[in-house]
Amino acid sequence: MYAKLWIILAITVYICHAAKQSKVTYTDKYDKIDVDAILHNERVLKRYIDCLMDRARCTPDGAELKKYIPEALETECAKCTEAQKRFAGKVMSFLLQNKRNYWNELLGKYDPNGKFRKKYEEAALQDEDYSSFYNE
Image (tube, rainbow, N blue to C red; front, side):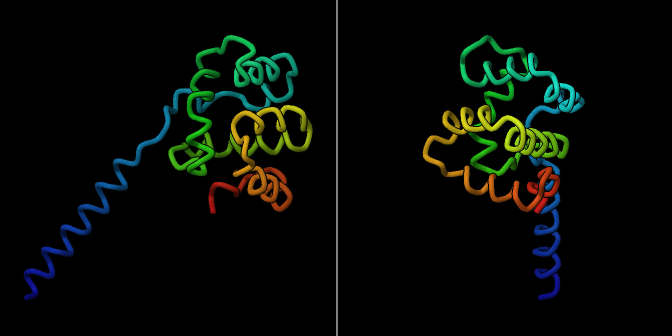
């Protein structure tokens, strides 16, 4: 009886460890980008917004971002690296507080039914820089 229990326990531990090790994340090759520099340079920020809104050609990092936004919104950034979660929080907070027109444009495209809007805007009121939004 104890042998079966130990086998079940060992299998459970192995499965949990394997699941934790195989957590799939988005590529981390852009995790060292200076997000603050982008947010505080209107020309560069507008270029990213235009890319995301299909008004301009995207840089490789812009194309990567555009590709994953719908899934990241839906899953609350489940596949994001820690750096990407911080970046997402910074960007959302900045746009909400400083560039509401960009925020509304992006939500019009990526959240046309308002499914995520309320959650993200409420979080902004509670946590000004979203630093803990994805770490709950």
